[in-house]
Length: 337
Image (cartoon, rainbow, N blue to C red; front, side):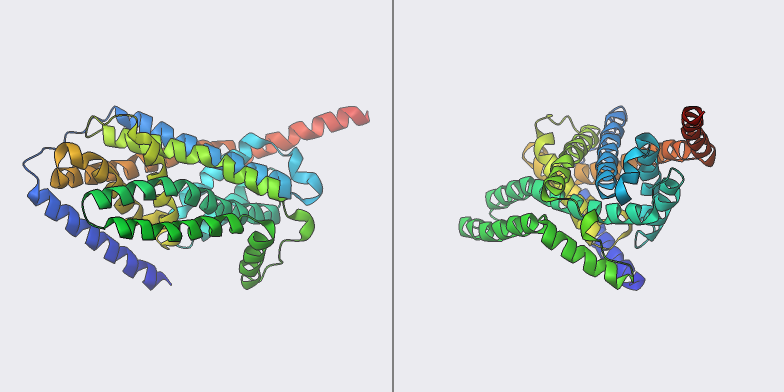
């Protein structure tokens, strides 16, 4: 599996590098000047996206806890456990991410089973929510391809049945019967016990989680706009469909089997920025600026992950965990006396 990931990664990087090199040579002497001040806004957008995901994961764990035990757990340290574990996603297979999250969340009373199950459900619903939001980008890309005569009007219309089927598939996946059927198969292959019926959230909870992820994509779109604004004065209105492009890049990156979606996410985001800038600066110059924006986007994302990861490490330190448990024991002792 590692060799497959490595081969896909090399192929994507080679293709992306080739296209950028060709555009760079064809650009009409346009210099890329980076305004680093916009990086703070991009980092803030990524922080908002990650914190939103952490809160949705915490809510799912609240609903999937064993006999309601997880309902009494402190939220802030668990959000810290989530942000700290996100740094492990660059390890192939995301095994490190799950293990890091279990280790930190268990310090504050969350069982390994609840942590694992809520993480699996969170990932599935994250993909579903991102797929729905990503349709914004697909509509925009189809319009652009037809405008450039890369596809005909008939081909654009023929794409609609595929889009409708994809939307229907995502909605079907959100139904608890289908969702837990898929997850239980995956869990069984991992030689784990399937999710028992009493720990499966209802459809309202599943739908609430899908909707709850929407701010993730809005924050991600804002981050992409700020990264693009670092290299070109782009209007804020572009951030709306950039939210769909960001969601699409995340979903494709997750299914690409590459650590952190490296290379794949940059290709999708770069294409979105190039489409937005082409009318103003021309195709080759747009690709050149888009490559810079996509690279900055990854840089700012890593900066946000390191910032929240460090905060999560501090919040979930063993000393803080010990103090939390000690503060819980004191009221119990006082009430018994």
